[in-house]
Image 1 (cartoon, rainbow, N blue to C red):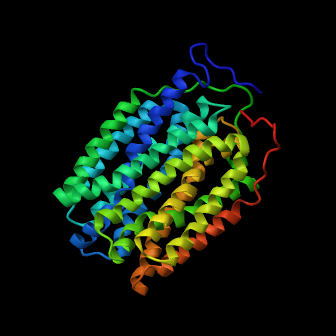
Image 2: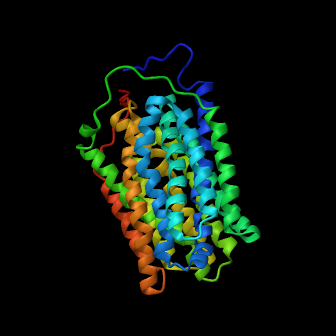
Length: 401
């Protein structure tokens, strides 16, 4: 069924592409801050005298918050539109990082950083993915791919910038700069983005009905397991590189390489998936992500870690670009914000349990190999969980209601 829109708004119009640009900036801002945590890991652990498991819990709480709260922010954007949601995220980021910069005990970071950055990402990510998805139909995968490429650009800029700020001014002032800068960008985005037209037709499927489907279970399991693997890499890749003798800024730059590769993955794979099939391309991205850990396990040289970052980023970028479009293809676009947020609670669980467990393995074994192997096993399991997903026949029109 075709979607009817208000006279002043048209799908895939100039307003739609402006919203894509706003979403790009929003995701670059929130993930540039969030994924820079790898650069803060070593100096915070040293100052607070905490081990790998306890320190990585700061990021785990943050990621858990943004994914779990994504179900709330997703429903909020469906109801209220993106502007108030983004302004809440801006306030949370500024307050959370300013409080973290003055923390004298690590538990303050658990609360201030975890909730502040977690709420900011929840407000700047899932809602904006839903907004862009609702603005497009024919070129949805491409549009979402461009929007979520902001995550890669933020990752590319955030970690090296944080490392440079830490080297020059210390980790506390680095948090101040990132908090004020990130919040300012979210405020600008809030006043640029436009609310998408409302689709009409059948009512959206009730979430309690959706969660009982085999398709939802496959998506949820893959998201949880893939997140365990991904966040182990994002937290421990810089530290493992430094343990291999690589300089701190160069080690932090590996997260930036993941970001660059993910940008390419989001743009190229997002464009190809509209023609080649979104579901099958989505499955292939998880296969690439899982296989990448064999490269990390094979060696700790700079070329090897660089190759790992490129392959991991490519698979991760395609995953993030295609997940909302696959959900829309399977379940329709009505209520998509709430559905995307619900699936991402699985990512929250994976992010919460993955890095601390990996930290325990690192502390217990005195190295990173067992943690890397565990992450790779989870990545492979995520790919296997997606194999039962149906692939719509060529020419089928995805549901809109």
